Picture 1 (cartoon, rainbow, N blue to C red):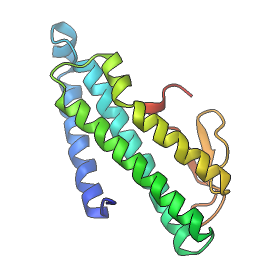
Picture 2: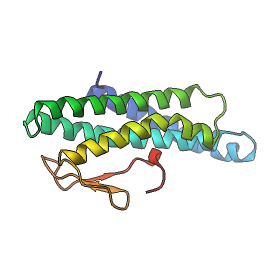
Picture 3: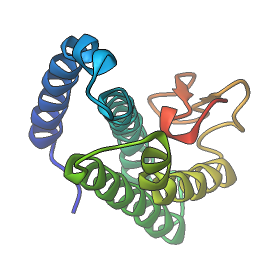
Picture 4: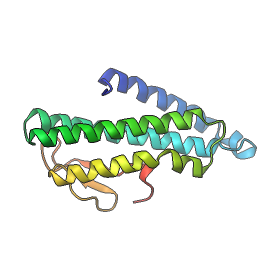
Length: 159
């Protein structure tokens, strides 16, 4: 099930507020509480990935509603988007449920998301929606968002 714009806005605001609280607590984390820097990093990656998926969801909705892709491609694109959203949701739950978090835990939580995003990116490239990433950025090649940059999510690692 795709999140509604209202749900996305609420979730983005909640994640931003949580990130601000965690960043304010970083000095405490540095002086003694193990796991807080990794948690702050994980939450930053989640918020970044969510913003990029929102952008890609808008692009996919635009091209499917304007019939720029075949019905088979529409199904494949919606399926790939759903898989990426579900994988990000699982990563979010894994991070939120962790009592302590290391960089290795963070990387493990995002494994499924990295795979799902890679598949989505390849599919978007194959139907001519985005360009092959260069220096961590792709370009939208079609639709109302033509020319817009799409950064690679932080959860994928360094570009």
